[in-house]
Image (tube, rainbow, N blue to C red; front, side, top):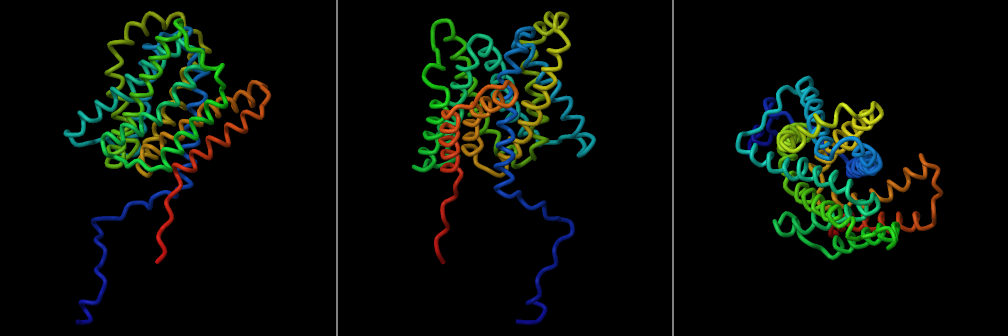
Length: 315
């Protein structure tokens, strides 16, 4: 072997290496922050839909979020280009995770209680796991199934059987929340590959752009009818919904899906009822109970089981 053949090849300057992947701790911290944002969504949205129709609120949310993120993308990265073949996939994901998901969520929240919604939305990780298995995106493991069940038990323990008041007066809203969970769980599975290939911001810009188009036929006239009677304080709540439970959460979730399986991203949804209760303790002077701490322990134990990596074999 000659000296020349032993030399390492020079790196190709035309193919720069991308940034190193984030640490698992950073990914989990991002997912935790997402659920804090989502936890505040229930109370704020419940107040907002008193003056804005669900379809009108969904339209404002999607349109303003799309405009803001497109502006940021144009200033920082230029036009959000994706291959033509992926546009149909993005439109389909937007129909599930932006339009259908939010129309069902806001409409369901208007027809059921916040407690019912916070219980029923915890079916998202179950739907995510089932869709992942059906589409062969992930493999079921005893540890993963046990983690999902343990976290779900924690949520049900926190809320108690009395919190879920299913009845004829709420059944339509309850079914809408379950439909919202199915749509969002399917969205998490399908959008993961797009987010990995195109980046989180580019993907979310297209998602909300298509989402606004999907919602427009349902919310356009409703928004025109509602807008004159909406108070300034309600518009401030809408601004919060756009900035935190929309732009921040969807961007961070899409970023996390580039570095973690959909089932791990979804399992964090079990923190939403716990987070909502903690926010009530912090901002509404409610008193924490032993049940809160016990439920939090169960939820975190379930998340630990799902996210814990298998030990590497000894070498």
